[in-house]
Length: 599
Image (cartoon, rainbow, N blue to C red):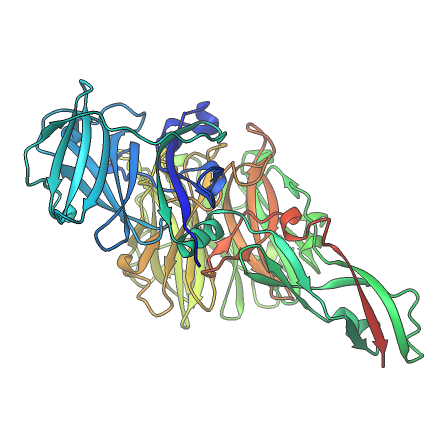
């Protein structure tokens, strides 16, 4: 018999602004319980549902937050959420007088913001609940006004966003008390969910850990090389898996004599102590002609140089020598703020996409450098002068002094090449940084061949924390989905990684093809000691393992520094970016033994 599980929704008390600001605390959080008594916070005790910002006529946005979320079942057994929309700091929102915000969800992971429900009152709403009455076949919304009085309104169709009845005064509505030690919790209500929903929630919103490795009792090999090439399946707490190699100790094995031996080994895990490079931000790793290369923004000299590293393996990049390939004095028009270099292979050529300015920040623009055929990536002279990105009509991508562009990335899909980038208008008003996408000419990858298409604005609280910014896009393409991770908020300890998802058969230039997660994939709460993680990229090693190169701060006010961590994939094939080495291969499981038959 399948048993019910329990989900508690809540908000949090704000902490120090740089740690957990109002925009983060005033969002809906979820906790999970299998017995209705002990609750485990999901998503690292971070919000999973945020109110969208509102849009102003001049293209700017006004950030919003939410309070008093209430979780309930819809008529069709999916989920609904009603909440009070507030200003970003939690104060009353004048536009929401007499209204409550309504969301829907099929799985409590992805949500749709439907709109504001009019309760037929002119009062500010201080609390709200909602339930579907099967007898009346309508929804009952109970709410408390600014004077502490409770009322009830009825509505046939929540999607109409208008109550049919006038408010009726009722007695106070109570909530079941929940005892939990979750940090900062402001508890709301609890609902029962099915075992299936509970399993998905826990699988999607907690970091998996390795629970076993499938290793046969006996292996057969004729040489150390044959044994070392064997791969084994590791199983994780959410039922997902990954492939591991094992470093075997075969000192007592006589490979020249057939026989049976007992051997021991250690599950292999490339170790990257964070950080691998201090004062290096926006890292990118690419394999080219059998070698791995690493580039990053150089914070050590005020972003006036770009260096490159080369190694035979990804771990080798951590200690590889740096070689200067671009500075702010060699070329006219390239005066500084050399940001976010990315290595990309287009056709048979290697390119570096990066941002630069002749001098002023307000002239920052996306550029492209090309390695000459047969050239050495470590040689500065083998790289072309940076070319400024232009639109399909040949005009520059942005109007210098008014609009900047940066963080341009490139990816191939169905034999066509796309670029995505961040663009920010400063004049006549600062609209914040938005993400765009377009196709490019692979023969001249600095030239767009389609008009730019807007993909994302920093509409959620985690994306407009301290500043309105979506930037640093990078594609991760699997056989299931097209993922585009991006970074948001200020480039401090509040920096974070969001996710856009498209189906393989969709039109990538149609904004409707992309779905944005309501919550970020990676935050300062994801991995202890790493603050403001973001601006990441991906590389696949020779074993098919996907690695995430990112920057974070070793301390709230530490320097931006590069790190590398393996990418896991969850039950839906979505990237998991917070799986640390300790969860990937725990001390308890890393040592293995087996019987070896030498052929």
